[in-house]
Structures are given as structure tokens and as C-alpha cells.
Length: 234
Image (cartoon, rainbow, N blue to C red; front, side, top):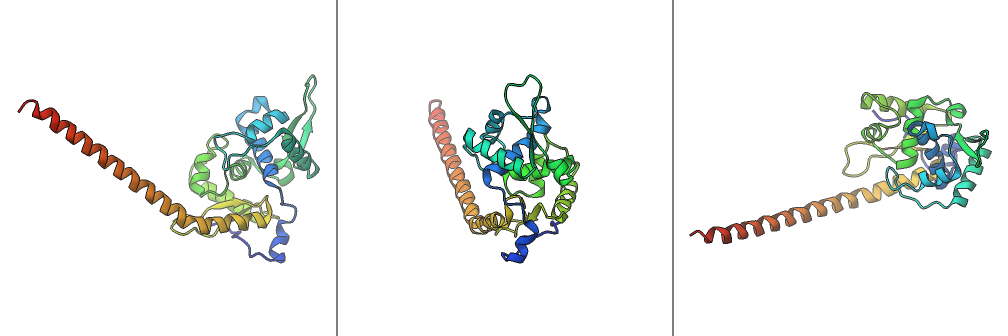
């Protein structure tokens, strides 16, 4: 199943439905972190700006890995607050400001849809199977069909929040991407996928060929060592 909102043509008419979804990469990462941490570390939620920075700069479960400074994260949070996607939570006795996302309220997203959207924001375009696997800590999907149903619903929202990228060369499954960066960012992702798909495939083949050559060399070395050992008893 493919989401019902395929990548739109780069025209002003196509861009109109996504009006308001033009977050920059740091805003997308910060918002994704807030949604993710609400699931995985509820006892430490809402988050301080330091916790948001740490989440933005994680080396695992992030594609791409980023290096976000505290000032950049704070500017992103301030912008998201102005868009009513994040709010500040003042807690009694707290020494620092804490922040929480408003995605559930702002866009009426149940947990499953929040989880899928956060995974797309934090890890880029993915297949439904990849989303299901990577969502495990946020929300457990029984099967890929359940993920596809969520993708379809997100694609049908107004404005749409998810779209399906054109199938990359040499791939069997389509990939899905969020629309929170606007159609311009989505078009860049689609172009990179179409240009890089073949190159990535060739790179992987080259890696496998090198690995086969290495294994053959090791086997040959073991054979020579065994022959030398056996000659001691001839």
C-alpha cells in the first residue's frame, strides 16, 4: 500500500496545502526529540533545553547525526512556541524552563501517529517496515499493515503531514517522508534518493565484493597454514 499523498509537483498550487509546514532542520529535530522523549522517558518529561540539545545530538537513532548548539536549540524552541507546536511548562521548584510538544493537541494525533511522525522527523525517509521496527520503543505495531494505515491517515490530513517518495532505482519498496519541512525539502529528498539510489547500490556491491575477496584471502592463508602443519607429520 502506498500513501495517498504522493510527492506533489513543484508548483505553487501543490505547495498551498502544506502552507505552515516549513520548519527548518533544527526545528524538526527538536520537535521530534520532544515527541520521542514523551514516549521513552516520561519520568523526565517535559525537557530542559539541555536535554533537548542532548536528544538532538544523539549518535544513535538519528539520521543524519547533527551538532546543535544550545543557542540554536533555544531559537528553534522559541520558533516552535510561536507556531503553537511547543509550550513552556513552569514547574514548582524547577530551576530551569521545561518544554513539551503540542503535536497531539494541535493536530489531533493519537499515540501511533505521533510515534510514526517522530520517527520520520528523527530518521528521515523510511519504508513502512523500517518505521515499524524503529517505532518499537515508542509504539508497538502488530504488523506493517498497521503502519501503512497510520501513514495513509497522516497523508490524508489537512494539511497533509506525510507523503510517499517516488520509488528509488533498484528498490522494491517505497519510502515515506514527513512534510513538516514543506514541499521544497521533500523534493530535495526525492531528488537525492533518485540520484543516489544507483550509487548507493553500486557502493554496497563493491563492499560485498571486497568482503568476499577478504574471506577468500583468509581461507587461502588458513589452507597454507594447515598444509604446513600437516607436513610435520609426513
